[in-house]
Length: 325
Image (tube, rainbow, N blue to C red; front, side, top):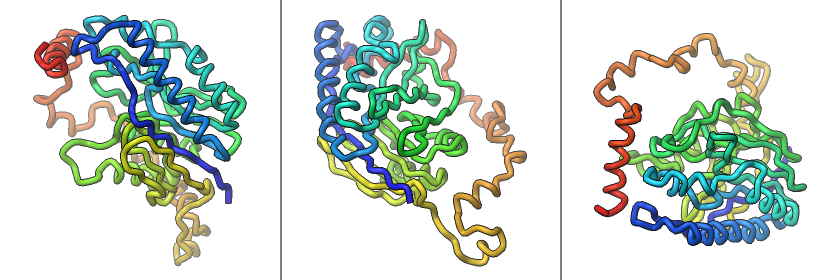
C-alpha cells in the first residue's frame, strides 16, 4: 500500500476580459491576472495543509479567452510567459510554503511557440515536469501548438501523468500516460463533458479513463466539476458548485483483484498486471493509422483547416460571442 493525500481545488471562478464584447484594456487584464494568481496562492496554501499533491485548474492566469481573439493577437501573446517565469515562480513559492506538490495549467512561451501547458511543481518549489496539451480544440489551434508526446514525471510520492481539458475526450491520451508508467493522472481543465450525450457523461468519461489506466484521476475545474476518482473507477468525492477543496487519500498500489481460475491460469490475481501484459500491440495498428477507412464517411464533414477557412469561421464566432457587435 502506498497512500497519497490529494486535493483538487475548485475555485469559484476567474475574472477575465471579454474581448469579443469590446473589452481589450491591458491594464484591466493585468489586474484580472493578478487577482487570479492571488486566488491560486490562497487556495494552494489552504489545500496544502497535510497534503501530498494539490491540483489546480487549467489556465491559472485566466487568459484563455484572449487567445481566441484574432483581431488583436497580441492581447493573448503579451501575457504568455516562459516556464520558469514570473507566475511559476509565485506558484513555486506557494508550493514551498505549503510543503506540497502542485499541478496547475498555464500557457507557456517557448521561443515563438505557445503551448497550453501543465506544470508539476515539487514541495521544494522545483519544476519536476511540464506537459504540453496534445488534443487542442479548434479555437485553441488558432494560437497554440499541440504537444508531441505523453511524458510522465517522478514526484516524491509516485509517478505523475498530466492531461489537460480536451485531452480527456480521447482515450489514447490517458492510456499512453499509463503505458509510460503514470500511477496517478492529474487533469487541470475547463470541462470534460460532451454535448448531446448521456446524462453525467463527463463523470462517466473520467471514471472510464481511470479504469482503462488502472490509475486514479484528479480533476480540477473552476466553478463546478472538480472530482477525484480512484483506480477502480469509483468517484471518491464530487462537490456541488462554488469554491471547494476536495480531499481524498488514494492508494497508488490499489488494483482490481481477480482470485479466480484466472489467477491459476495466468499466475496473478492483479488485473492491472494481467491486462497490461495481455495486450497484443502488433494488431493495434488501426489506432495509429492516419487515414483509417472510417474517415471516408466524413468527407463532407471535414474540418476547416486552411487559413481562409479558419478566418471565415472566426468571423462567425466573433459575431456569435460578441452578441452581434
